[in-house]
Image 1 (cartoon, helix red, strand yellow):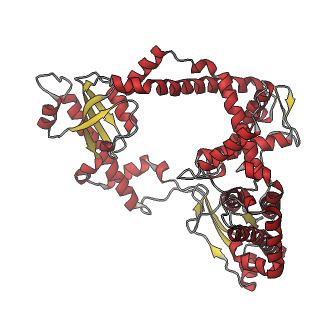
Image 2 (tube, helix red, strand yellow):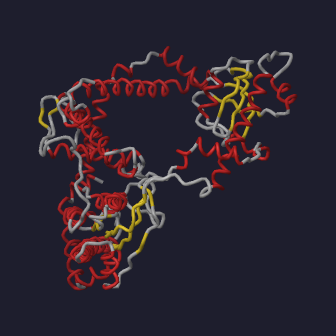
Image 3 (tube, rainbow, N blue to C red):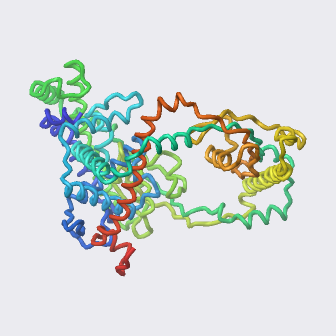
Length: 559
């Protein structure tokens, strides 16, 4: 993919990167009232600190931040961007950026270099990782659908691939000692991870005890008082909005370009660069169609930007500045102004899947600043107006009685299930070979379930269903001697009691065939552990002269 970029960079800058640049200007233009943003909190303008004695430039900071954003995107297999994860705050993003800057500078200081061919291969592998069948993702489509809406370019992808390889080589250099595993160590670790157990288990599920729960007014009231935090409703906001869908401007864009002019541009581009410059195209007709779509999209971006900005400008210019201006201007222009139901920041509107920028803009509105926009989405722009803000609250018991009753009954059923499990566990405490686990369970009215053999390396055990987590069962099983019961283990569903029948011998033939690969994987894990420990120590030493450290420790305290 990057190889194609290099061979036909002029074509790509004309058709792809140009769109990205226009898109960036478009999403950032207009009379938006969103307020300031971006990283670098706690620093003076232009001051990004120093690492290993090297001054951090704004360009290096942005490249590192983009690298982390793409790293997160690929790590989630293209399912999520970091701004959709509420745990990745601006402070977290800044810390990750500076750690990345530190790693890249250390790699350069050690003379680590990656070839352009390696970068090409890495980028191809990254794109293939997004496809369920491992096929290459066409560069044009990836740029149009993924990078462009985020204000990113194919150059950003190439920079990230280079960072990825340099950090990988740095990890190998730093963590080399962890990779040295002796055959004896590997054999011992393999036996520990792959020795299987034979076990029986009894589940105590709350659903089996719901019918025994009686609901009393006093008990319900006490339960509600004890669990008020669970019924807390966070701050919410309700907004009206007008959407400018990019797809609605394709026809106007095509008309504005003109059939003759558009055909000439398509033919000229195709004659100059040929079919090989259009990834995924198998025929001249298909290549020309893709060129045509790219040119139309480029013009449509201009058209929707103008329309959204003109609309927003008219809304903002109406005096006095009030939310009703949005609906009034929309009605005058024949546009639909929709209204959301109240929504929280961690959920977004229930009416549609709103981009993170929409939610941020909505919660940035105030009675004094009730309008915002154009706000960027992946395929649309939005202009927003504040309807109302709803403070956080805890509803009364009467308002949510049915929900509280359901929760109360389930909570009581869980307690009953665990009580039954405790009684069984006590009854099995004196377990002897003469009085086996199965007999003891049956005598108490329970039927144990035989689990298939499993080991610490087992990844799934369908027989557990939703009654228990696999790791819970592993922990109970491998900490219980053969011939003994585990005692009660509480779960979200209730509880279980597990009995270890025996430890099964390791399959020596299988071990011999898998040991080499296992040792290599174990070495990589150890190498990663060594590297992560080094990163933590190095960050403590080297990031003291950066804004991220100064913001966390304004008094200069040493971590």
